[in-house]
Amino acid sequence: MRWFDLLIFLYPANWRAEFAAEMRTVFLDAMRQHPWREAAGLLRGAIEQRGLQARRTFPLPSPFALFFGLTAALSAQMIVYAALLPHGSRLLLRTWQNIAGFLTVLFVLAVISPAQTPREDPAALALAKSIYGPTLKALRDAKTLDDLKRADGLLDSEDWISGDRFGRTILTKKDENRELESMLALPPAQRVVTMEIVWAEQDRDRLEVLLWVAPSEAESVDAAGVKHRIVRGTLARDLFEKRSSGWMRIRHDKLTPNSMILAVDGVSRFMPPLDAAHRVTPGEPAR
Amino acid sequence: MRHVEQDHVPLTEPVFLILTSLAEEPRHGYALMTDIDALSNGRVRLSTGTLYGALSRLLEAGWIERFESDDTSRDKRWYRLTPAGHALLAADVERLRQLTRAAAARLKTREV
Image 1 (tube, helix red, strand yellow):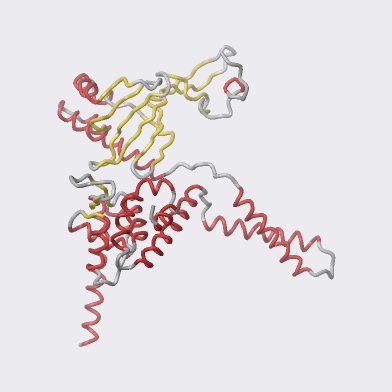
Image 2 (image 1 turned 120 degrees about the vertical axis):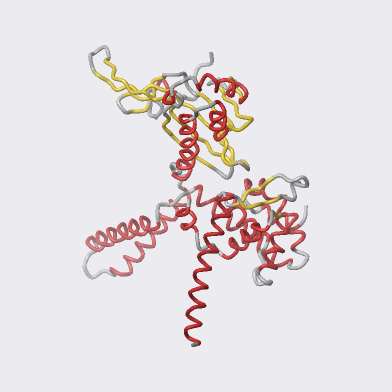
């Protein structure tokens, strides 16, 4: 281990896994001419990457929302505080003391608060739609088997697999290619299924898409005669990898049985809180 | 796609130089540093930390990509422009061309 490895160690772990080895090589070459500048550059880079990672882990509201929120809260507090203070007291000093206390509490809250709820990434959603859209169109418009193969090649990599809900591989690309012929016999509208993206998230070279496949809505009447809107479909997960040819789907996993009830009266069956029977509690009896 | 490129120009100087360097041919990290030094006549010398910060952002944005080469090892990886990176660089070059043309025309007017 060399002294500059300590500087590289300051970078986030995922960064080190991706870049540390080649950074070390480049640094060794570059430091022959400018050792101190290079060391300072490594340190500055580590601080920047840590900062970026912190901003991703603790996403802040927009600067405008922060500014107006803080201004409104401070103003309200000052008005209330001034109204409560007896006349003739040292209003200004005590108001500033109060503001300082308020900011300290805010700072402590910011430091100790857990990560905020992850938000949907609009870029990932747009990316996912931009991958599925052209493929579905090409599948629908295909006239020949070659057209279908080309359309399929837009989406799935050569090592693509499809898994069932128990994690077993049930289809490979070879199987899929064999099925394309029967797809050609279908009317164009039936070659593609409707899909609704529930969640899309991406990092540098992977994209995860959680989706409802073929959701269909129907009305159902329960035993008490009450009508309900039932959405049935399949919950699936697609994984994409960024390759030299672009984003390719490498895995499709069906997570639930076909035509499972996904939502009742607009409320998802997968969204907590569900009832106590679905909750995992410590000390569940062993079976 | 053009509006997407317009959203990202003007490019920062390090990003512009990295894309320009890769527009010529694929390069690995140290070759990029030395080429950028030469491209800018020694005015811009990227440190290792700055270079990899920029490369990481460019990879994430999909403007460059790593690729496998015969002599790729864990310690030496090659980078090249993607079509999106190429289009982005072209958009910024066009922007600069328009600016320099306008500036040159005004200078000429003043000299006359």
